[in-house]
Image (cartoon, rainbow, N blue to C red; front, side, top):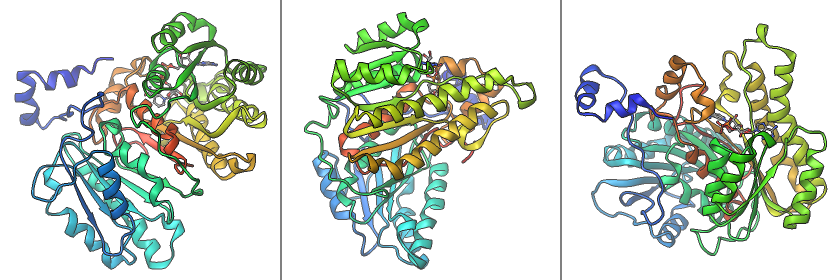
Length: 446
Ligand code: NAD
């Protein structure tokens, strides 16, 4: 969907008027293209004394072919290991590292702060580590030109399990993820093997994507296929033609099924077992809206939204887990929404269903171990993404949705897809129980 205002800001008259009138100036975001270096410039790496991550991060950056800077330059990223901070007084280390260099972060640059999950520390250390969140969220709001900031809490012992997360954040794949707090190893630290080829991390994997005929689902299917997976693209029979187009384009399979049918979980389990010998990655992307304020909302529209967005994913999970259709090192990935975090006028049904998806992740992360295999469950919470769904939104609300964020624009379906692909990566086994917003640091619910 065209963002006409953003196009206008790039015309000669727009370039003249936007700064004069103090209008929002959405930056051009750098996105991933095969062959392009992950960052546009070297990384400056720093650490508070006693940090436990700097050394391993330095090695991993070298493995990933990312240059670490030693001089004064324009930086592709600033990475600071704050795990050595055990007392609020030491938070000053953040100031000392970032103050001289923050203006040297280049366009679409990255700031990543590494910490210890506060809930796994105590006393002064817990307080100091919690303080990192306010710092990083503010840095995200101050950065300009498409640069972003994130905080990664790495549990003690999970130092080697953060590689997929660092590769994702220190790349153009995380273009629309901003101001987020990510936990690695907070729900246990399984042995995770790095993929043989980081350009094809999903080689040999079978992935199911629901709602894949268009929009975000189609983008997830394409990114998974690019990463080497065989994708089963699922959608309702009424979207059969679009679905076949998506599946053919990526040499995947199309499955026409309404996930709300009572026998859908069983049919899906049979299909996955008989045709593919099981499944490795399940993405619950299918979703609908039926917006009305509560007093005007019909019971049917309440039920329809809660059934597609929440009840159906839960029923599918139960069946695939009970019948062991989901293979070891499997992934379940939900699609929530910032409306589920912040609430929204006219969306009591939708926001309840999407907050329920957050509940599904929290409940599942604590319990999936009971199935005797290693599984993870995470979700994305997209903000304003340019799709047919958001094209229906009235123009005024649409403009507000785009502009009221640090990056001052809507995201693209591929931004959500890249985030989901990071969860799906076989090296993301310690990334469990996260709900990461893909929202350009939208003000809504921030
Ligand atoms: P979309 O309407 O373009 O695509 C959703 C797809 O789900 C459609 O192809 C639809 O046919 C399919 N679907 C609906 N009901 C189904 C059912 N019962 N069985 C099987 N398939 C079904 O929407 P989108 O914008 O691509 O959104 C994808 C997901 O992202 C949804 O869960 C949505 O709630 C969420 N989301 C979108 C945005 C956004 O800005 N676009 C923001 C936050 C969250």
